[in-house]
Structures are given as structure tokens and as C-alpha cells.
Image 1: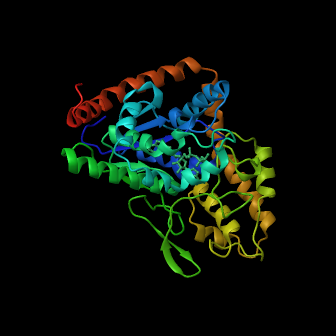
Image 2 (image 1 turned 135 degrees about the vertical axis):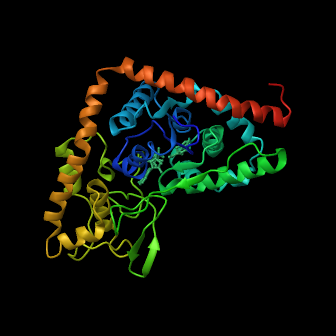
Image 3 (image 1 turned 120 degrees about the horizontal axis):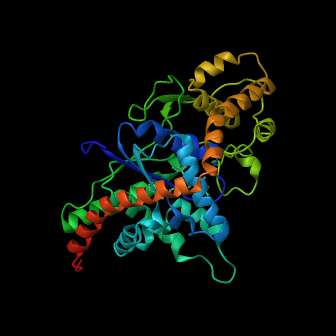
Length: 359
Ligand code: ATP
Ligand code: LTN
């Protein structure tokens, strides 16, 4: 791994069902980026426990996410893959950053506000870990002197918080953290050759504007596709069978009218399906629009289901192979943790010294 490369860091929490939104919004881009950047991909288990988890299921999910990373093409020869709780510096820096984070900044995070509703326990109310989720995420990022964070658009608010924490810390104690930036893949509306650094514009009914990758729920195109959705018809899981995929796409909500056009404001459902189609086949949504002029939703949906099935097939095959070799997967994760430990220990040592702890 060349030292002069910029660093990217990202993670997925092992909770709920990994879906094509996670893949298209995050993991698929990591695979492409790992050649260009020093890449660190984490299974953020300590983030998963900010909402209630069953221990047996959690253990399985952690392995599932690791195998999905590998099956999707994250290559341990090129990237560091590890489990967050294997590197104690994450919780150490997370705690330290908590002592520098105004409560009000955490309370206004959208993800916190949404999850607070869903997870609030009748007797005890909300758990403190849910509120402190973003400081742990900031620690994940800042420990590795990360330059870029490839994530879906829903994470931008957390990254803004990370940046302001880092800036404030640097101002008070001197340069300590690299100030990171989000890397959000744009919708491929014009050219399949678009890159995250050269964002494309996409057409909306009121002109041209930029948009980040956000896959919406199949049952409700106004809300993002979500791992914790109660209704499995909200998402296509990465490990869904061809039959399930056909069925879910068939019953996916559509808009009124018949035209297959990309217009997220007025036709959110069909635009979402076009976006999924485009991302799986590396085709501009404008090309797809042309292809489906005069065709009906049923024909379009049948082709879309085939495109998703074909796109997921190699991942699912690789996953089934990895399932047979859990020891090999654990070995990759242990080695990843060692490399992550080497990098992060330098940052945590510097932080402790700067704030007056004896390290
Ligand atoms: P939950 O809904 O339970 O919060 P999630 O589906 O958002 O979970 P995360 O683990 O929070 O999943 O996200 C993992 C990665 O996937 C992040 O980079 C996130 O931005 C991206 N991601 C999640 N959902 C979508 C989506 N619908 N479209 C695009 N990217 C997404
Ligand atoms: N909050 C993120 C998961 C996450 C993450 C990170 C992403 C935890 N730590 C560090 C990027 C960098 C999410 O996707 N829900």
C-alpha cells in the first residue's frame, strides 16, 4: 500500500438486512475506490448496539457484513477490513470527543431524532449511546487521518459534525486531525463514466441540480430504503433470491401515468427504479428513458428484476463460498485489526498527550 495515497474510511453497521441501497450507495463505490486510495473498511459493531440487538443474531450479522464486503469485491490485499470493537482506540477517542461535543449538536442530528422514536423504551426512554453515536463515528474517521468518506447522502450531517469537531480540536490543541470530506456518488443520469469527484447534474422538473446517491424504499419512494424497515417489501436484500427479487419489484409502488421518465420530484417511484437500473447496469438514466419509450411498467419491471438478479448473482455466489470458510474470514478480520491498530495508535497517543493525559 503506497504511503502517498489519500485515505478513505467507511463502515456499515451489522444490524438489520443489508440491502441494495447500502450496496449502491456505499459498498459498490468502495470497490472502485480501493485502487486509488489507502482504504479502510470497518464493520461498525459498536454502532449496531446503539439500538437493541440480540447477541446471537449480532454475532451472525457481524460475519454477514464481513462476507458481504468480501463478496462484493473488497480485496484484503488492497484494503484493510476489520471489526470496530477489535481496535479499542475507537471507544477511547469516542469518549474523549464526547467531552468536547455540545449536547445540542447531538440532539439535532436527524438520524438520532428518527431512531429515538423507533427505539425508545417505555420504561427507560432513550439510551445515551444512541445520542452519542456521531462522536463514535467521528472517532472512527479521525483516528485514521481520513481524507474522504464514501457514504450515502444520509450520512452528510454526521460528517459535518465530524469536521467541526476536528476543526475545533485542531484550533485549540494544534494540528492533530486531518479534516475529512464526504464522497457521495452522484446519480448517473448522463454518462456512465461519471466519477464521484466530478459530480454530474441530473435533470429535475425545475432544471438542473446535483443529487447524491439515495435509494428510496420500494414501498414508499419518499423515504430512503432502510435496513431497519419493518416491511421487507421496502428493500431488496443483497441475499434475496431471484424469486423474491421478481416479486418485490413487481409489487413496488409506481407513480400515476404511464411514462418511464426520470423526474424525482413528480415521479419519485419510477425515478428510483430507473436509478437502481442505471446503477446496476452502468447505464445513464437518460439512455434507459429512451429504451423504454412507449413500453409499459410491467415490461420495464421485468427487465429491471433481471438486471438486479444478474448484478447480485456474482456477489451471492462468492458469499456462499465464503460461508463455508468462516476461519479464513476471521483471519482476514484479525489481520485487518492489527493494521488498523498500528495506524490508529499514533493518533490516539497524540490526542492523549495534547489534552494532558499521561499515555
Ligand atoms: P438504518 O436504516 O437502519 O439506519 P441504513 O440502511 O441506513 O440503516 P447504514 O448501516 O446506516 O444502513 O448505512 C450503511 C451505508 O449505506 C452508509 O454509507 C449509508 O449512507 C448507505 N445507505 C444506507 N441506506 C441507503 C440508501 N437508501 N441509499 C443509498 N445509500 C444508503
Ligand atoms: N453511521 C454510518 C456507519 C458508520 C460510518 C462510520 C460510516 C459508522 N462509522 C465512519 C463512515 C465512516 C452509517 O452508515 N449509518
